[in-house]
Amino acid sequence: MRFATRRFEVVVDDVRTAYRVYAPKVRATLPVILFLHGAGESGTEDVAPTTVGIGPAIAAAPERFPALVVFPQASQGYGWRGFNMAAAVAALADVESRYATDRARVYVTGISMGGYGTWLLALQQPERFAAVVPVCGGLDRTTSHLDIPHAAERLAPIPQWVFHGDADNIIPVEESRLMVEALRTAGADVRYSEYAGVRHNSWDRAYAEPELMPWLLSQRR
Image (cartoon, rainbow, N blue to C red; front, side, top):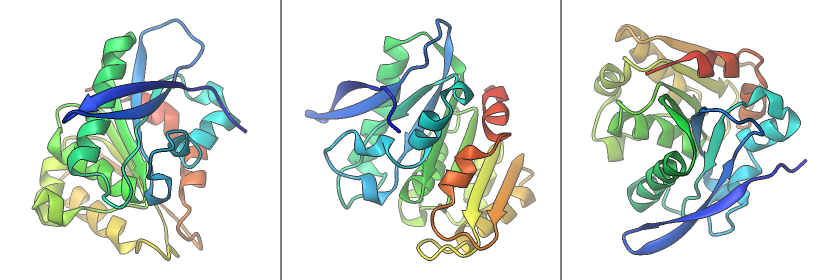
């Protein structure tokens, strides 16, 4: 099932890059969800980020997503860091300039490579996000230049809901377990859902969780 998105472009470091945005059919000031896709959706075909992860969940039940959802796209083989992360942040800012948005309700979520990007962006801009939802990700130790305990201390003020499958064959479940343990030690408001027998695709179950969107959209900065 497909759903309607609009295509926009931003310029970062003199490079023009496209992103997509989902806007529900409501006339209101809306919260914003920034979605960071996984490695398989990297490239230049800007619809791809909408086809895996939160996109299919929106297509299946749009009434569950009364928010603007931003879909930037990372270039192939580099991940959510450097230029790609700057382009994602630029896309978020562009949406905030185009639409009436609730600046106290801005969220970031991502899957796999985007799960790493979710925690990294929250570390880089902790004041910007009201909550974060990393799915089958972990801490990008190289880019963040932090170990897990110090990253958790910095992230602790942000409410978080973490998802992972315990049979993940791509990103070991220990990546999320270690972060969640450190976050709890740091006093964070963190929920953790670990799916028994689920391999890498824990995102379909995560984004279908009935409590996820009400919890997420209730968080305010």
